[in-house]
Image (cartoon, rainbow, N blue to C red; front, side):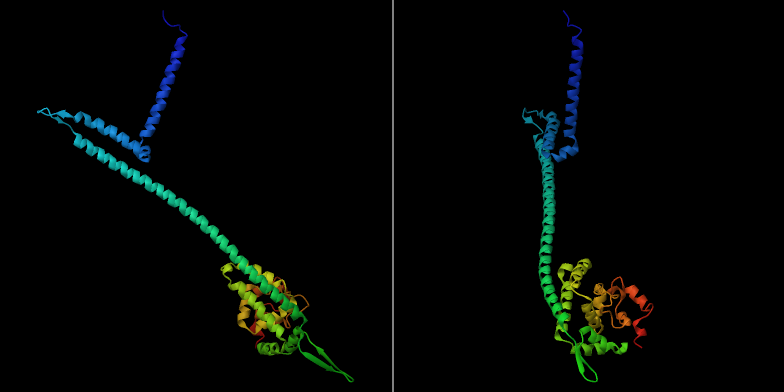
Length: 316
């Protein structure tokens, strides 16, 4: 008695499943037998070579006339040895690739450690700089307080019945000395004037440029002018127009200081339009370049008719 017709679809389904399974197995086997895959797995290649070589040499086994067994075992083992050499080379290649990966990972790790070390060194260096900077800044601030209390030379005015003696401020002393002088003699006049001013002024000038030199030459800010300008701005916050005026005329007698002031924009906070302690004569501003001053430079030049003028025009 035959099977019912209803079982035929079941047989068809089972047949398709078997074919699909065989196709999957064939794809997997083909994938494993691909050269690129075998090169990545040398032992699989070695097994495949053993099978192929054995299959090729087995038909070569024959019997000689004396009944002794003659085989191609010598050639067979030579082929095995050759396959072993190939696999050994591939294993060494794989090992070298692993070593390269490890070396690459170590290099990346070392670079990361180097960056972390540089950051730590930078942080420590900056901390040391700030400790010294704020120590110098505190010392300078104390000197500025003393300077603001200092007095210049004494003057006297005679009246019919009495003589009045009074003391000029440091700025007024300089202003008085330069009032009737010619610009061509200004450096000598300022040198002679600063000689008679109190020691606290010399201390202020020394400490101010000491801080400037400390900032400008520190290793933490090599080729980083933005950081230099930031700390110079902090330094100049403690100065008023009175101190700027003293720095202004001190620099005129020293070309090196003029160069530093121009390069670092040290007078950017010097308020030229402020009635308190402006330059004694407007043309004195021409000793410096425009970049040394702030935004009010152009208006100051325009107010005093100095457009297109140069220092040589007043030194003749």
